[in-house]
Image 1 (cartoon, helix red, strand yellow):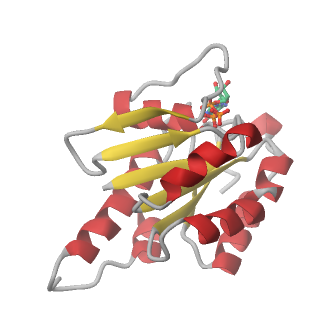
Image 2: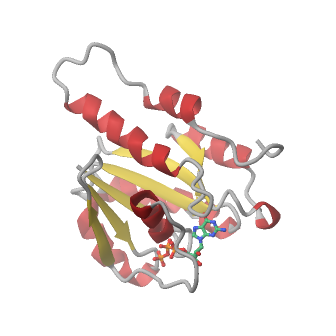
Length: 187
Ligand SMILES: Nc1nc2c(ncn2[C@@H]2O[C@H](COP(=O)(O)OP(=O)(O)OP(=O)(O)O)[C@@H](O)[C@H]2O)c(=O)[nH]1
């Protein structure tokens, strides 16, 4: 099972992956991903996570991987308006290149950065609703909802692969039940 991380450069895809894998925040200087250089194999679900480059110049490299992704986590940065405005373009790209039945989830990352926030949580929710995709805010720095983002898509895929599940897994419901808010007041 392959999960692919997509979104503008700098939204925090590599950091989200490192947080999930190692439980740590990758602080320090920002090193942009080149093409797809970070393929993590795990002993758990999801088995493989692909970290893609957000930079436009690597787009043709990443296009080739969409087809093999079972799930896609599409990220924007709550402190960067243009990364949010570009979500629609990313969705178009996903629809064009990814499998039709790939699981998709929208993540508003850097939810810890309260002072620099420019995209409200409600805006993310509204956009996600418009496109019918589950949504949550995450933070690779604090760890908020990081585990949940990966386990939710993994659960959805696991249920789908079962021939005769006793009950249907409802990804939207699971996410809204399990996710945590970004802070005491802003949620
Ligand atoms: N405050 C805060 N900063 C973050 C978070 N996640 C990532 N960052 C910072 O954002 C910058 C970019 O993070 P990356 O994970 O390298 O971004 P990317 O999306 O992989 O970028 P590309 O590889 O160019 O596509 C780094 O300086 C990180 O320290 C977060 O949750 N909170």
